[in-house]
Length: 114
Image (cartoon, rainbow, N blue to C red; front, top):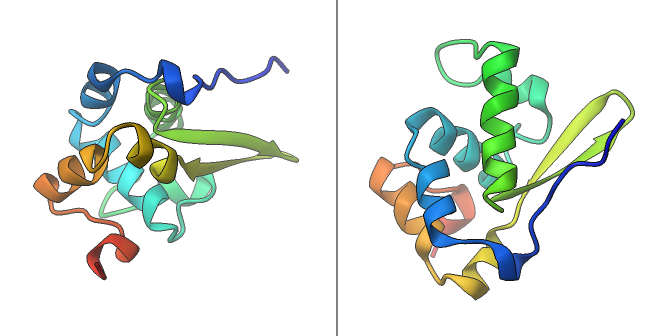
């Protein structure tokens, strides 16, 4: 398998973040991953909310989030684990990702406690 592309945090562009989170389904996926709930694996993300996301759509959403620098993906056996890069993003663009998720009403659990 070919390696996955993850941009260095210095190469992450705000327009890429805005594009990635402009889709409500992608924003919901990112909120799930950032919240650390059941969003670790693609299988858990496919069954989130009230409808099942087709595998091809989920793969594309994950790719857009990854290439925008919002998440980091790693293969563990046959599963793909997804992790948010919120702490890195907050250092580069303070509050940007959380402000977008807040506009959707989907703040991760740890952000709601603040």
